[in-house]
Image (cartoon, rainbow, N blue to C red; front, top):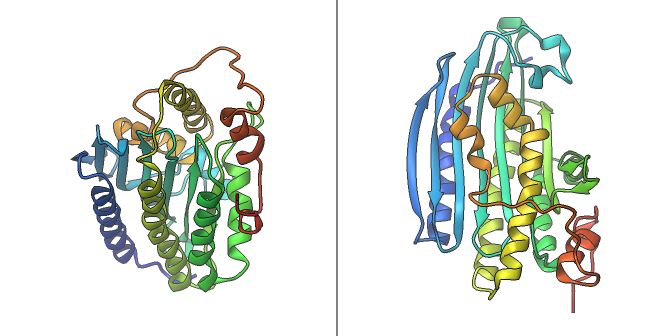
Length: 307
């Protein structure tokens, strides 16, 4: 197996983080962006960027990390037990955007790189993806989101979009609720195909699709009028986001198990959220349509547009 260009990956990830932050500044010029550089006692560190109290983005985080360790944590060896006990280096950029307006969806993306072992025993791969979590769904937004996801994948193989979409639908699923987290997008892990150049190119292409795709939706929806009903529903549905991140999310588990920086790991959580016992949406309401229509796996690229 060829040796990966670690410095090249690191440099691109740092530049990528900056490009996403710049794109979000364009979307929400009222938001306050703060930077926080940190070191990890076990090796490595990162740079976190938090956005707060914007008119468009209520909270957002764009984090870069580059950490090393003597042995992979359990979350990283669950599907690859043969790598247990080996030294590792993990780099990545992850982001979560929580908008103020309930008619704007929450969005998440990450691109990560893992190198395990040394010398001839070295194993490496890319992972990541992007996904969208609406509160009040719009078919045209879902179609546009998935079209951009497909466009990002196609130069690296026509089979990748349907494969990564299916993985996304499978991964972002709350088993204890029997419910999808959102309308999906792309999810890939252990990606090491053709060669390093090809794999790195695919990871970059997916990452670069995120900001333009999400910004287009924010520009279209953030001025939509809403009231207390929509705001309370948004806060209620954010609870599902929290449940997924704390119970299932591999990145969260990896960060906590590897002794990462807790403030940065949990930056993905929304600023406000509520849970209500046994809440039920009224039949035929916009709130009911979210779970009955939008949160069902769909072939969005062949979904008919709403009239």
